[in-house]
Amino acid sequence: MGRPDPGPTLGWRLKAAVSTAFGRMGLDIRWRRPPADLRGAVAHPADAARLAPGSSFIMDVPVERLRLTHFFSAVREAGHPVVEMAHRIAAGADRAGALLPVETFYERWQPANRAEFFGLAGASPALTALPAWVPVCPWTQADAISLSRKMVAINRAENRLFGPPVGIRDGHITAGGPWSPAKADIEFRRIAALVASIRARGFVTEGLPTGLLIRAGGQWVVCMLAGQHRAAVAEAAGLRTLPVLFELHTPPVRRSEVRFWPLVRSGVFTAEQALLILDRVVAGEPPPGCPHPASPDRLGWQAERGNVSGPGS
Image (cartoon, rainbow, N blue to C red):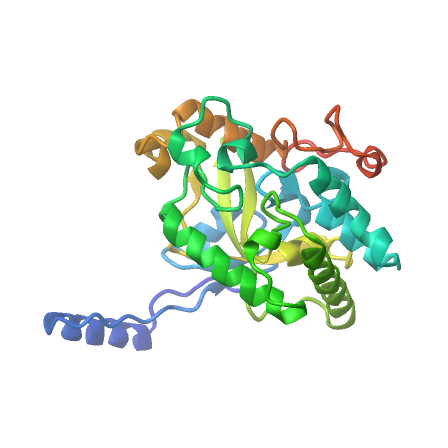
């Protein structure tokens, strides 16, 4: 069982003193405290924050509270195509059968820009100018250019591990597309390797998935920032919870603070648009035009699944 962070130790107090001394000389010296490991110790992020104030922390998050592509719960019934692919691979499907959900999904839904990704009418020019895969949300603190560069670099590096170093414009299946045959091969190999690894060795905690806590009244969900593929295969590999790292520099998003969200204040999103997006994230409800089990334009394989509504359902 994880233990609460006991607070600053003598070692950390010494490091703080050294940082202060160097700061007086104009040098910025920082040390990063290890996160408090609260796996098995808490069931709610608020309890984790109380047990480890001023610290990053790790806690087990139920799979149904994880959000992929912002709007989909990570359980199979929610209809995310990568989750469905993982279950098919775990059941022994061949390449064609495993890839069918992803291929049919992205034949139907490849938003042209970030505004279309969110299903927003009357969006700002700043939003319609962004590709769908740029991870800009109303609460995002980093600028779009730095996020784009980071996404391009990460995508190419990850692709290189499982196939040719194709770029993000060849496919990004956890951010609304695009999609290509080259990306299909890479994703099939990647998901198959993850399912096999977790089944054989359990969940390896090195390089933990990181999440952003979203709170709306008494409800909470976790948007995956890093580790979407691991979240997508968790249920197929037999996991009911996933250990997630919540970093101190990524504070929770609270619905009640909408007027303070960076891209609401800058005018990229209106407050009404921002709340619409957050409420869809919490409910696990994809935007109009995105196929899912409860939508009129659901795909055949989605119609075979049930549907999940809201966190904790």
